[in-house]
Image: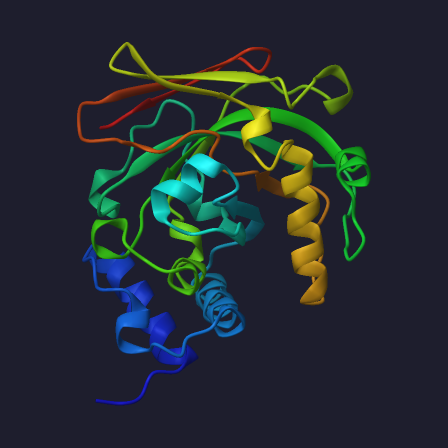
Length: 260
């Protein structure tokens, strides 16, 4: 067996995704995997996605809420990539045939008007670069068995990326108090969780600033037109076939998701 490196880790994770086969965490076999190397693995998986025809469309933040951090037993937010292949058109069911064990979580979504480059980005400067704010649901899908992983594992796995859907309502950030923007999560008509935007790093713009500064340290920036998923507001809920999930926001409308 060859030793672990960036190339092997990227291959293992993309093969698990393509075959819908979960696996043990990379760190079980590569205990020296650190965060910097994990981000290099993430970037290598992006390079391969682009090589096969996908287009880079934005970024996502993971583990920005205390609920998610406690659920996954990690303590730091992280960033990952979005491509056009991860967009779930409104009304389309969750593509169960492409996923291992999908879960859904409500998110506040930014569409960028201006380029945002760190370091030194604050929540105020980050929000000033936003063109519109939307409601969204992200369908996450870890390649690790039972969603068990360390922080380097989930960074390498592109923050458990799967699919995402955004609602039809887009509002300028100046019209909203995003810390107080509330969301109710329903599964099959029953409210199962709720949160406000304050669950996301105190304010979703703080998450956006964190992402810009994180990318800035790597010589990258958030580009105009990019979609930014700011992180799950609540814990994620399973989306088995037949399930109906809805996220109802105070000012951003509702987003509906069918389990397929």
